[in-house]
Length: 271
Image (cartoon, rainbow, N blue to C red; front, side):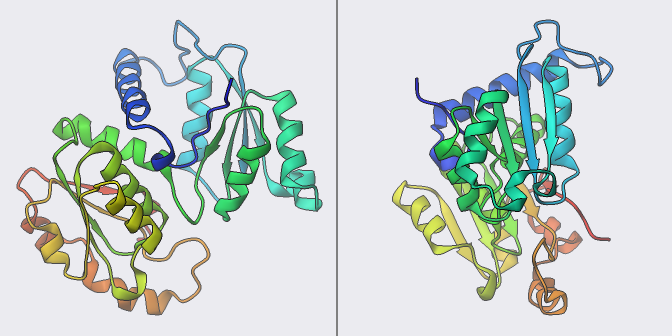
């Protein structure tokens, strides 16, 4: 049996992604009104353990996976690079093989996308991408679920991305193609999304447009999305603020979107 990983949205079938969304909507609905720590009656992950490797700071991703495992009847083991032999020179391949003997799945949040891919290559249990500098697929599943809770199916809708063409933007590009909605990205020339990601969308008939005019991108949009201007690893905050200021999501911009439009920010928001 082939081990199934969750590395990127474009590497997972549209059918599987739709199934995950449907299951998530149903699971959330069935938990309505329950205390957060209540374990689901069917305990689908009873006896299962998730290893959580977090080399990057995390609030929402870490807590959401930990709580999800508890609610589904499973357990978690929290690990950081400093606590593992991986941080002292052990290979990713050996780490993958060893963890596969002890746990049932691995989520990793790290910088290099190649690290996640190599871990998945050598692991015999599912590996989940909890964020890399290349993409953030779990964030997109949560965002699309939120969109659909407010506005119904995202298929055929228009989403407008404002600002840095970063890892989350890459996952939005993948999502637009897999879930069949229109995506308009307004980005400064210096911070456009990677060309290989945009090219993939075009090759797969994705309705993805990269613009430099935020007002053109947001016109009539059903959702307006953005991210923090200074992310992990960014060193020139002043330059980035100057580049991204015209792409700030404010009342003027939201007024140009559809009247029912929602605003999404994956956080953290530096206030």
